[in-house]
Length: 416
Image (cartoon, rainbow, N blue to C red):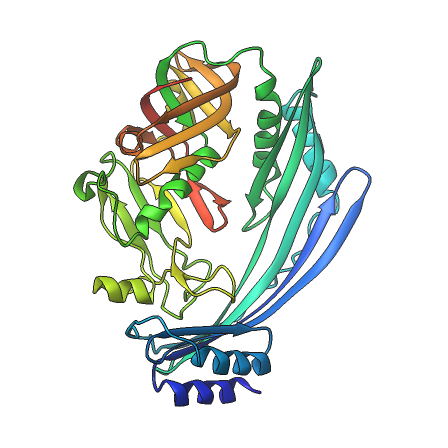
């Protein structure tokens, strides 16, 4: 069965209120160690249909014939009562770039050398898992939409092991390379994450400034991101006083794809402006519920899932940033959080967060000694209000969508 016949089938069942989606992706996965190289190739080919017939209906399958059967079966089941949203009707196409860009042949050896250099011989690169590939998506619907887009990406996970006397520590770092491999930055994160926890002691003072590495700041941003897609905000959120005045958060995936997972054109959305909660990220259905326009943030974790609102390329920015060196020099006493030792934990309903990390003590604007481990926890609302300064060194990390942040200075927290 062809895509045209599937479209005709859906049009007969739900005139003008249907959507047909197809995704094809190819990926090469390479696992590297000192002595071994393994490669695997993966391919995903999936179809999904969404239509409104006495309510919302959804079906998915691995090929058109199976999808037609799934549509017939889903049509016999009770449907969730819901009016169809206004579907986009544009047309466009952007082919996928080459997703299998060759890596330097000595990437493992070079990264291992950098990890050893930056850790002064106390850490070694244990493994490197790389994934490169591309995905193509095509969407048509009952409003005349016909769009296709392709994206390429390269990401992975690196693992390093640190040793000091009789103690050992293992760390992992996720990364995404939009251009040439940034081995220097990755090696620094691995070296610090593998050796700082081996320091003889933790924080020696209870309160001070908190300087966040871009990777740590991006993880904190990703942890609070559900607030930007919620139908109902927690009671503690004050839209006009959401964060410190210097905070600006945007989502702009136009560099990755011209359309979202529902065919809505991608655009920049300023979610937080001058500390105020300025906008919400919408897919078609959430926009209809809120009587607002969709923002191009319908995401599909898989062809097996219904689209849902979510970040696509979220980042913290500023027009008056400071260099990381200037931020460091401004700290009288504090801690530089270089690497997380556990995932960032938040309870947005209760306005609570918990961040466990390792890093370096700062005294009089100078990094002094490694911190074996520390913890900061409290209210999310207070954390956002204490953003003292924002750096100019914006970096992106897979969360799994790209989340970006520069170095961030938080004023006065309590360390544990």
